[in-house]
Image (cartoon, rainbow, N blue to C red; front, side, top):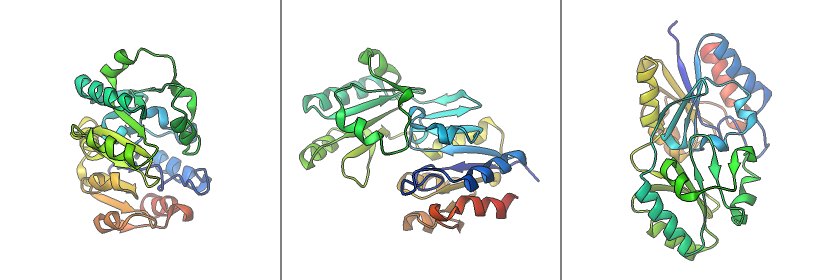
Length: 261
């Protein structure tokens, strides 16, 4: 059997905020698939600094990060697409005019001012380890190597203002109506997955993915075998080749066992 590559979203796919951890059944299934010689990659909107140890400890072969802006393979940067300095500088200046909170992420670390209390409180509840957060930094120097920005808006006025200054970027507003991901229009999980397949010389027909949310759409349109979680959005299920059980029912584990074990 040809070596396969499987891309896994995190939130709502292998990790459930409702239970607050990744189950042993899911961890063991992924490790067993790796033991069979297949490649397992995370494909997440999160930058590397937002990947918690309970994800890293599974032993993934690589990571598609920051909605496709960064790719790591065996702990090395395989490819990175930075935001344009001039564009992200303009964005940050505009956010500062209204004292809107933000965090800047590079390939390995995230940079945040300690005064950004709302964001720091938010991150406590979304499976993030703070050890890769930097609080004392030269912001202008960091702006030259940013892959993604996350923004927190306190109310609807800040939300509408933030949306008005995102013209050069793509963005996603989370269901809480406060946290927002801001990233390049030129990247997605799909662009990064195509890069991974090319660099590792893996045929498209040997690619699989699991996902559930809006930033998985391009990934589902790219891989040969997209699998939607039972808890996925309808738009994801419509693009799926198959639908597994929900994250709360260890859907990833059971489908991996069926396909590869």
